Image: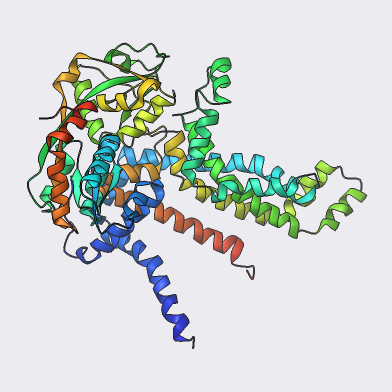
Length: 266
Length: 259
């Protein structure tokens, strides 16, 4: 998958990576960069790169942490875990990484970029999500093979896409998606807008979208569980604050918030 | 000799623009290039990009040239406002354009709802949506370019044609259009390159499916997450296409003029 740069190319690696990453950020018109830039007037800050599916729950936990630690600021960059792993590998200024599956974290670990071995702090399962009113009449995974239904899946490279591929294989279904979205929230958005008849997202995303969507359970979801690894990063600008936030996410108070949001807590 | 105060920042500016592109060329896995270029995914994305950019340019010509004529040659109330509105997509972040297109042409959109209800047509996630997204971001370039050419062209030639009995349509087709042909061509090339590079509006409105809506920029973005080498190869291809178009543009329409 990832290859290290060869001898002659090494000198160019950093400028190229920075150029590519900044180019991508511009191209994606991604708002998260603004979050990263917002350091505010506080004296200590940590930047958390986190999976898109963690958007609401970590934002809440970050605010809670800031209240408990006056003078600190926790800023977030939410995107597909695989995209975040690439950004961290390219030298993005991240202090903590929370991934939606082990593979992106493994890439970061393989590059010796974690301060300590990652811990699993949450787990999540897929659910079928349909717009409220279920215009496509979707009742189960079998509908994903119907070419007449408009179906969205996450791109295979991102964690929710990998999990989707796995459950569809387990169920023996040859899915006919119409689009592979860049992260789980982009997938969810297409359902919220009613542009697709069904999609596979995490249970927690269905809860976030509230009345706009409906979740449909299916038996295979129990067999594919995504573990969420968490680690403070080696190049953290404030290592103490980074590891304090990691510890906080594993505290009983944080676990309650995660459970309320629909995550399993190991 | 230029003063150092200008020369030094100028050279830094030049390096800033060129080094990333040079890096892309140096970092490219040249050994894998033939295999990557021959892969069905890359070929599919490249073909889709070329076809959609060309279709978006054609649509822009069909609608944009008359619009440019309207702005340059006729008077109507609120013309200045209309001209300003036409250029909004130029400065609008493309992803906002994608959201707007989805809100209007989506299955539950203002127009899309009726398209779906009456004709069973659903635009999002189709190649047609890629063309519409490209047209939305590219047409203003064409309109601005053609309008400029029309304003610079000598109206007396049109008047002479009219005096000789040509109808307004014949005058437009036989006199006005040939006069502004270089402007139309330059505008078309600008529009084509803009449509070719389109990302934000496409991924938002048309989604991403290989062979149907996954254009080169989308393929680059997604390859970056799983196979950075492939992303570099794809980027290199887009860079080559862009440079080729630029070279063509300079020689054909810019080289002779003193601009």
